[in-house]
Length: 243
Image 1 (cartoon, helix red, strand yellow):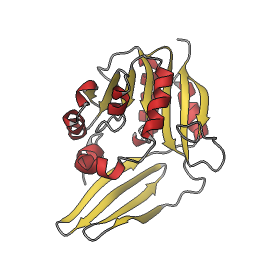
Image 2 (image 1 turned 90 degrees about the vertical axis):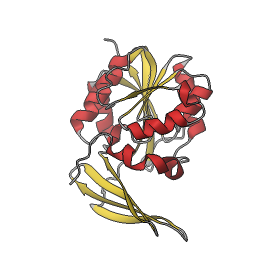
Image 3 (image 1 turned 30 degrees about the horizontal axis):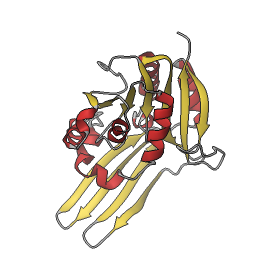
């Protein structure tokens, strides 16, 4: 059985990532929110992938740096128009080796933090985020809000067309969910495996506080939508505390 190395998800999905997730989140809202927080300072995006967010941020005038474990994803980013505007480090973003410091914003979009499948890796990542921020800088986390009574396993139909069936299958073991997007075509079957460790907002705040980050605000989206008990997604802003 192939282990879930940090690069596995990106390497397996890079060639179809933009097709499947190009409009997965609010790109314009993300760019505006991050630009306002950055105030012309440099931005570091973790899990930068194909540049779905990084390139629009760079086009908006931000100095954007990114980290991704998958060389295949980074290759896609660099091949895009505007990809050369983004400075990219290939590596595990739980460690942030070689990225420098002095960032105004560290962005963990679209479940990036939860894609680290252990509590230790998530805590280490948040500590490193705090360390690479400039004084008064911000960490921004976009993530799902896990259900209070999550199901143990399941299969969902993502898409059905004349030439493809796309399924999403998952199984929960403890606090880690392992899944795969299954693409079935006449050419054969492709698996796009993933792992995620979602945590409740209170636990996320505890991990951030342990890393020296102070909660500033939590919204239900990038346009300051209210966050309440019915929210299934969160955008959380933390500020670097005194060191």
